[in-house]
Length: 458
Image 1 (cartoon, one colour):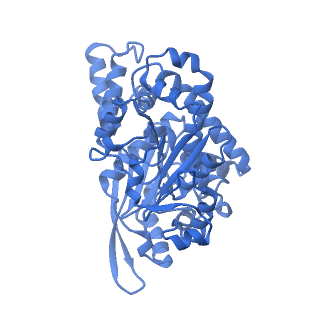
Image 2 (tube, helix red, strand yellow):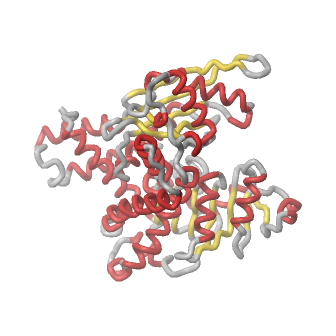
Image 3 (cartoon, rainbow, N blue to C red):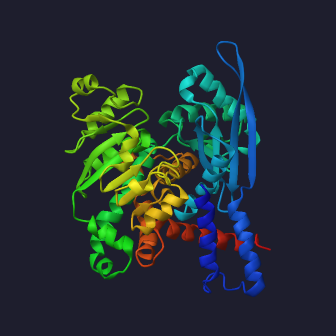
């Protein structure tokens, strides 16, 4: 994610040239302060790593690399998920921790940024072994975790089960201490929040829906008069039936797809979805409700052959999963992993609107290429914050021992994301920067101001 570093530096450069930003800093002092900001925002506060020593059920002992990286606690305790995936590495975790810092700042949440990772394919381990891995993770990083220090949550390869296990181990190792808020994304029985599992997917679609239905429709005259290339892209799609393709049909992608399928505000037609096995295509629109039901009954996997489609009365063609990105659609929703659109396929992308549900699904070069072509990219930092927003609500509910209904959680989630969009969109459609750059400038500005006022730039 080199683009992350590039955008931070470009954002600081733009702010340095703005005389109204930190006006007390002048001349050489200003230059020195901004060099300090580059260093502070680009590097993590702490890198913690260890090998988890696990005895498998067959008696073999393995050592599994694991990480917890704490980027910044300028705004509040570190906050970020724990990823179980075979591709996890230190650089990836550090970049994701940095993204969490910026994301929390953008959405005005009282958290800093952190991230964790364990280098495993969870499908290759038994339930007992995964339980042991979770407990060992808490034991190895015991001193740095806590409700007011560093609060993990689920990520790729983890969910409420793993958070329950980890919270239980934290409770055992901290007898008599507050423990309920040590992890978020837990089950309801263990103090989790209603709506947390669906929060990221719903938030991704809320962002797109609000931009295209509320903001664009209410500001058509202003946008028509604008010379902004992204305003023209939005207007071109404001009143048409949108063909959508969803890459990744896990927890995030399936929830976002179902929101789009059921939406009464926009005319969506989801013609393609994919997972790690297959792509399903139907030009007349897929039955997303039927596919969600199928995945729930089949370990999260989409149908992979005609007999499964026929048995469940799902009308679709089976195609190669990687072909989804190059389909002739209006909207691409990326809900898989990093670096899916890159220099080798960027010229084949036909969608004019791309929504980043996953973190970093577009490389730096492809991001610039597509933005220069006027493709409107709704970036991860803006779109996929639903999980951490509802994690914040879970954290608050645990402290107050008062719990919201599911409807209350979703209303607050939409209102929170609406507030962010109302701050960012007028600026975005009024200047030449892509939406990612605008979002980063807002985050960097907030973080820089707080660090300056806390005396961290001297």
